[in-house]
Length: 385
Image 1 (cartoon, one colour):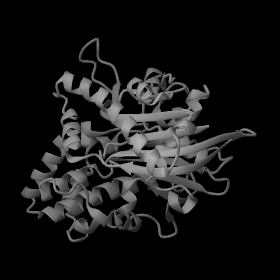
Image 2 (cartoon, rainbow, N blue to C red):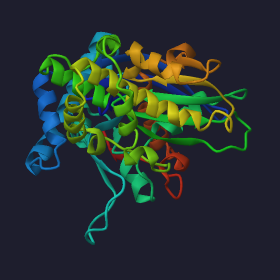
Image 3 (tube, helix red, strand yellow):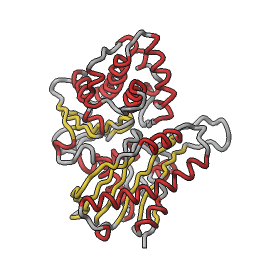
Image 4 (cartoon, rainbow, N blue to C red):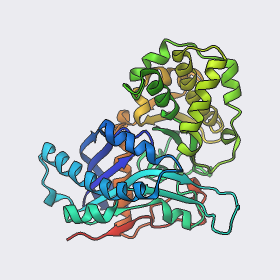
């Protein structure tokens, strides 16, 4: 089966498209990445999406963007297939994560209607109608219905794709939010552990946007952070955020580390007398230290010998440098590209895999990661034709 996997993460840097061929042989799922591309969002769309991250965003803006993104995704797929020289007729299934605009895995019981909830937009019915292909999407809600947090979902695929018979591994994805999967070696009695560690690129990107007046949305190669100085005293204060002390499983997003957090962060940086690049350096170290702190919890119990990184953060040399110095010297720091899977393509490939399993009515969730009471078959379907 040929599956087109779509992923747009909390970094809002564009739509990742992966064309993946899957086969099922003797109980093993085989995959081959045929093509991958990121279709960047233009500045106007980016601004509109940022507006929707505000809890006070008008409902009609959310609703209309839901339909628009379905159209946009369809157009992007057609453009990508044309560039790749791949016929739409050869695609059997489209599997779309959608664009997360709200994720609230736990709620205060302030009223009888409050429930854990999540919302990803980019209507799959529009996508199916435009392309005439069956589409599976809206994965997270089924896990929430089973008592889980609806995130992180990537750990299920991490186990399928990367668990080793000889060493323990940490699969680390640094997108807008950073998440990790701790994989004991096959046969170990230790459980798989997975959760969001906290901000990945999100706070760094927002600080860069503030510094440049929106002209740049990320720290290319970590050059800005490289020129700054980390304020370790302030960093210790930032590490006291309640999320970092919360037990796993846990997940987070812009609700905790978005615009409100960044405004406070920027103001506190001013109060500490920091320059803009010092703030970016400190934000970068915050990401690195929160990740390293969590990895260190499992090195002995899970015999972790390798940390394998994917996501946009792999391109931030300063971030990876900060991370490396906080981990044991004998711990290998690799990327998924070193193991044959493009580090940028990984999440789109993962959602292609989740869709492949879902359409075949096979469980595609990992309760150990999400906290659900049972494994489920995630994904709603809009039939093609």
